[in-house]
Image (cartoon, rainbow, N blue to C red; front, side, top):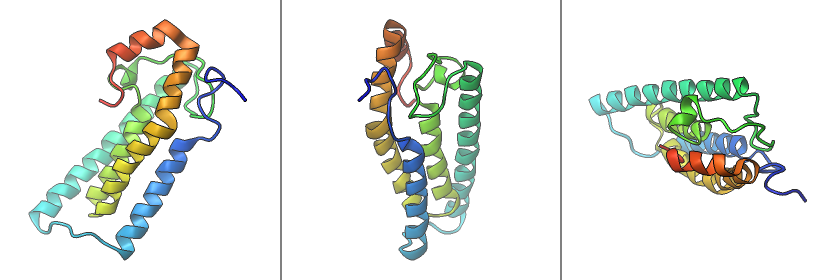
Length: 158
């Protein structure tokens, strides 16, 4: 069995969590819909959802670009080769996980599906427990003081 320095996880939990939350939210929204505002309120929520989807896409693409430039992996089941602190990592330690939560929330608003909003919250919790805490231990083991200094400067989510 490996240590935290070897890799943060054996299973790439975040994509599994995101896909599960998306499917569950869509299925529940279809068969057990929650009440939703109508009229102008619904239009405003739909517009806000579209904005969140765009922000999520920009955030994840930017994070992946910065990670690729730094020659490190975005895979949550592979060891980090370098500590990335630029781009979106300058204001959130977890831009890809933040993007997945924003995507689900945005889809929930855009599609008038309250289940996807709940799925977004569940995803944040699951990512925290299954991935973030383990990744932070991995980064601590691999990068030591550089990681601790970065952790002090930048918030986990926002």
